[in-house]
Length: 469
Ligand code: ARG
Image 1 (cartoon, helix red, strand yellow):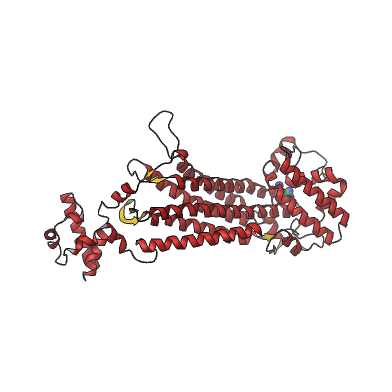
Image 2 (image 1 turned 60 degrees about the vertical axis):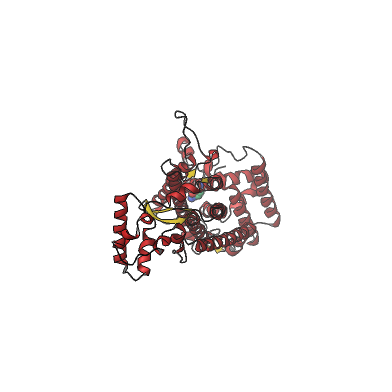
């Protein structure tokens, strides 16, 4: 039976009928639809609309549908179901007869889809945060293993200063922790229950909305029925948080691609995550990294599509909102699909410490440390900068590094230089002077690792808390 055929004199155009359906994609919301329907049924019983027996048979019917969906291949297929709501109604009637049609008393699909989508996004956030925590853990493990290994840090992609490899890895951990935090923040606004909002104006029966919200572990019922049935901000926020997450992964992927090129030679791509070329026998290509970078475009595309879909919609529900589902699912699937691969890749990749270390010691990466030497001897910073700039110019003429200049060379630039200058140019000394919170001095980086580990621990605890709530 259709859900709305009463007032129609003509059947739908078959092509239109197929085209407007959402069952093909919203059937993945089935478990949420069943849970929300259970909460609604209990509220109907409390309101005196269903008898105790009717409630029991509806709940049993819903449970059977859930069991069938879990057990029987091909069960959640139906050429006639318009959407997941229609599918459940049909299945329920098939199992428990006409009493099944009582379930829809006082509710609308507009509040149902809003509720199902909130339940879906909430679960997706919990799952994603778990995966983000695992990615962070993989980066932190590598940071611990890296010890005092150094690498060049770049600005403008030009040699800037040496840093610890661990420091570079922790930079990404910071980004991912912000992503996890953004998702947690988004979750607060996701976690309210539209049930009882009706089609637009609120339920037509005296349903206890606080009760229904509690049944589904929502923090509270939504405050306004017009907003509740038309709001998809939570989807937009969620997918935008995912764009930012994938954007971070894309920046990482881009760096790793560069680092794996023969010109850098900083990392050896793990064979398990690389592919060859059908033409050039020598090739080992960074496909995982390239796809991570490529899929970022896709997630950002979903966020953009959602924004454009919502722009200009009058209140409240419009069928345009159905279009938000596939973008949401694709964004979440894409992000969820790549996170475990990033963690696996990170465990397997090999850093060429010797090569990175060598690169961190050439190209005047100790020039700022050299200028700092003069500053510590009372030379004004601007003048110190100028003199070390001249020292670099001299080195370029002689094809050498700052530590290769003689004291005579140096004295021709400034009288403040003495033998101790050479010590301050050594890699360990250069690292050591960056001794500030968040700096690359080894002790600071070790503090950074410890702090990041603590954050991951509390993130994991929080996630487990939600998982068992
Ligand atoms: N499949 C619909 C959607 O995703 C469910 C809500 C339908 N509501 C309606 N008034 N036609 O938006």
